[in-house]
Length: 252
Image 1 (cartoon, rainbow, N blue to C red):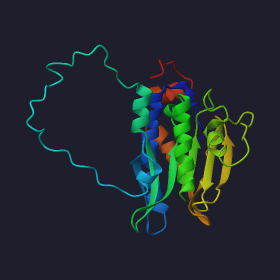
Image 2: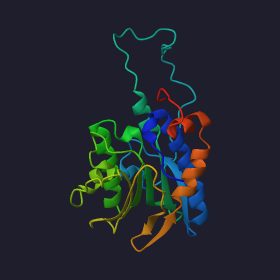
Image 3: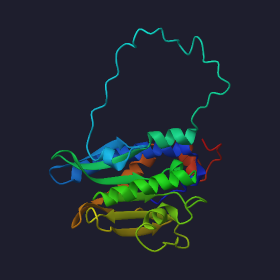
Image 4: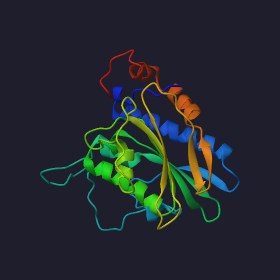
């Protein structure tokens, strides 16, 4: 299945597809990973790389609040001039998931699959945080597969790969007609510089298999196309028609 033009829909629709694709990738990887490895969909928004190297049990919340006479917001809202709510982009950024590949021995984090979302490109800080997370992972010895199906914007003129690779090598300009990027980064270990296997693609391009490294000398081929296709087929017909240019929309 060729890559679609995801700029035809808004961040909410892409978020729904992103969530479905992450789940399909997790299922597919757990069928092909070598013994001892497993893939999980994990939510790492706002987490430093040191915090996601190992699994943590969620903290428990007390069943009851201390008896201090708290006031219910619904009954008596605070008498403050402004109440600020997060933007939809911030919400999607917080909810975005990653595929993490771990080894069962201590649940050691081995690799990450990062599928870029509009919320990773909506402002300079978003690009900086996304690129910083990938760079930190590589510096910690974790391999990363980047899937960026969104064209460069004002905050990532060379794409997210360009923002990431600027820490390690020369500027990577976008190839004419191929503004989207698949990049597999292999980390040789802490204190050493990574390498990258980069495949520029465009709307209408086939989705190639990409290597996902488990150590600096071995990898598995990630089944991007079949999982992409299955996830796309599961999208509502209305939004598939919008994505394929058969229908106008309000970009939800």
